[in-house]
Amino acid sequence: MTEKNRQILDAFLIIVAGCFWGSMGIFVRRLGTYGFRPIQIVCVRVTLAALIFALVLYAKDRAGFRISIRDIPLFLGLGFGSILFFTVCYFTAIEMMSLSAAAILLYTSPVWIMLMSVVFFHEKLTKEKIIALVLAFGGCVFVTGISGAGVTPFGLLAGLGSGIGYGLYSILGTVALRRYSPYTVTAYTFMFAAAGSWVICRPVELLTIFHNAGSFGGLLAFCCLTALITAVIPFLAYTLGLRTVEASRAGIIATIEPMVATLIGVVVFSEPLTVLSGLGILLILSAVILLNWKQGGT
Image 1: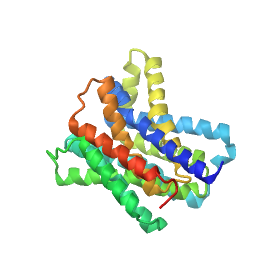
Image 2: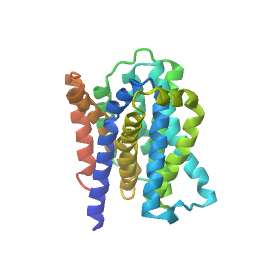
Image 3: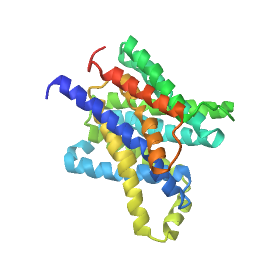
């Protein structure tokens, strides 16, 4: 495969990741009917994803379980500093302000990715990237809504923290991929995230919900499907995409997620599609097209 074709494939994988992340609302709403708290849904999701990633790594490359002791802080950063931190911050923001305001702050992540990429990877801050960033962020604002009602200083910090933590995966993931395969990176990231999630998820309450479920097998199967669709497939696809796609470019492309979430809301939950949402979708698509018009170009 030529370098150009690999870049096209990897950019497509990041788009796939965004589409799968955009379906998360379907699964979260269903699991919420069982009485799970948001952080417990996160715990179930990352724990089962960790098990699936470990099985994939075992099947693909058993030697991939060997990592250097000096790289443990890197995977702690990916698991705790990115996956778990951004999720806790995001759900904290949701509890303290409107969903739209929390979502807008989460999607400041491409800004943080671009800034960190310039500092740590010396990526060029090109005109195309800046224009695409403005289009993508504007699109996210229109798609999620422009209400800032109920924003508090602590809620603002939590929301910005979610964006930084979300963006940190692209930065640390790029570093980890220089030393390990995507399968090793995702497996250890989620194993550390899962370990941390059990500390804060009220495990006794979580296990009680499973025990009291009318159909334990059915609930467990749906939880496994949730982990597969909203974590395993998208994070593996995104990590594979980071092999050749710059972190800043990947962060902007992934903003296709709220667009997909909005379309799913319209199709699955019969939510109205407003003029602003439609405009936001067009802006996000424009950003993605702009970044991929000349693959690999700067």
